[in-house]
Length: 297
Image (cartoon, rainbow, N blue to C red; front, side, top):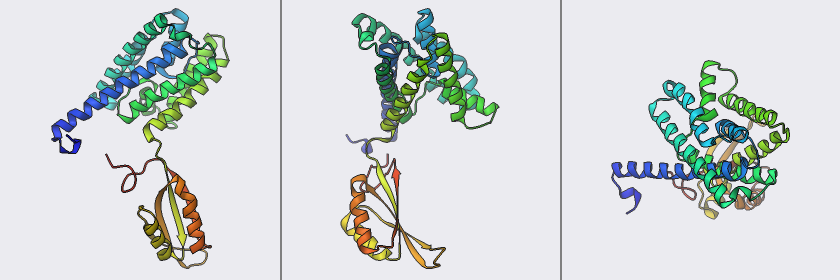
C-alpha cells in the first residue's frame, strides 16, 4: 500500500518508525567511527563524543558511558529552552549512541577491527565519513544527541554574542585543544580538522542528496523568445519577473528557472544565440522540489 493511501494515524506511526530506524543506523555509524578508527588511533574530535573519547584514551573507562553522563546535565538544562519532546528525543538518541559505542568498542576488540589502520590520517578520513553519515541521519530525520550543539544554544541564550554556531565552534575547539595538550600531540588538532571537514561534507551529502541543481537568472530584453525556447526544449518551468535596468532605464525581463547541472552549457549557448546582450547568473541550488525535480515530502 502506498504511503499516500494511509490514514493520518498510520502515516504518523510510519514516520516515527522511519525516524527512529535511521536514528539507530546513525548511532551505529557514528559509534563505529569512534570504536574502529578514532579512539584506537587516539584522535580526539570535537563535541561530547570527543571529550568521552579523551577520557577513554587516558583512563580506559568506556566512552559510551561518558557520552551519556556528559550529555545528561546538558539535556536537563535544555529542558526549559527546547521543550520536553525535543529533550526526550535527545535523551533516547544519547542512550542509543552510548550503547552503540560500547557495542562497537567490544566488537572492534574481539574482531580486531580497531587494527584496520594505524595511520592517523586514514583514521581521521574514514572516521569523518562514518561520523558524517551518522550526523546526516540525525539532521535529516530530526533527531539529536544534544551535545555541544545544544550546549551552544543554551550559552547563546544566556550570553547572546555571535551566533549559535560560534558557541558550538568554541566548545568543540576547546575539546580538540585540550585533547592535543593532554595527549601531548599537537598533530591531533590537524587530524581533528580533517575529521570535522570530512564529517561536515558527508553529512551535507546525506541531507541534500546528489541531485543538486542550478538556479539561473536570465536578464534579457527578449524575455518572450528566451522563455519560449526554454519551455519548448526543457520540462522545467520558467518564471518572469518584470525589471528595469537602472543604468539604461529600459524595461527588462528577469527569467528565473532551475535546471540540472549538465544542462547549464546548453542553456548558456541558447541564450547567447537569442540575445548576446543578456545577463546570466548561475547559482547552486541544494534543494529543488517540484515538477522535473524531487517531490515535496
